[in-house]
Image 1 (tube, each protein chain N blue to C red):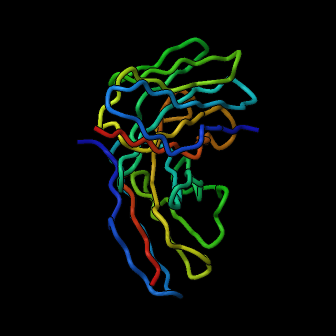
Image 2 (image 1 turned 45 degrees about the vertical axis):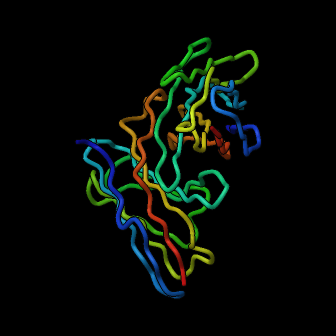
Length: 114
Length: 113
C-alpha cells in the first residue's frame, strides 16, 4: 500500500531538547511539506521541499530545521529555539507541480513538551 | 495574495439534516479548489476537488461547485450521518513559486443522533 508514514504518533520531550519527527512516503512524490496544527486552528506551513537536496521556509520556520537527502524522506527537527513546540505536526506530499494535484497527508505526530 | 475563508464553527446538526459549509477564496490566478476532512487525532483526507470554474466535485454524498463569479466553493450534503462528524478544511492551490496550498481555518461538524 502506498502512503505516508509518520513516527512516532506521540512524542514527549523536555524543554531545551531537540527532537526529530520522521516522515516517509512511498508514493514517489517529488514535493513534501511540514505543517503545524494547534487546537482549533488551521494548518500553518513550516517547511517544504520540491526536490531532493532543496527546501524552502514556510510561514513559521523559526525554531525548526529539515533535510531532504532522499526523495522518500523529509524529517523535521524541532529545536530548543522553538518557543512553543507543543502541537500536532502533519507531513504531506504531492506528485508534481500540477495545480490540480492534491496533497496526501500522513497520520500526524503529536508533540508535547513537558 | 492567496487566501481561503471558511465559515466559523462549530456546527451541530441532527442526523439527516442538510449541511452547508461556506468557503470563499482569494487568488491571483486560476486555482484548483479542494475540501479535506480530518477525523479526531488523524491526518487530513481529500474529500473532493474541482480544477476549473463550474466544475462540481463530489464524493460520499458531499458536493461542492467551483463558482468563479462569487469566488466560492461551498460544501453541501443532503443528509448528514453521525459518521460525518469531523473537521472540514477548504483549500486552494495555484501555480506559483513554491507550489503551496492555502488552507482555511477548518469548520468542526458534530452530528447528533
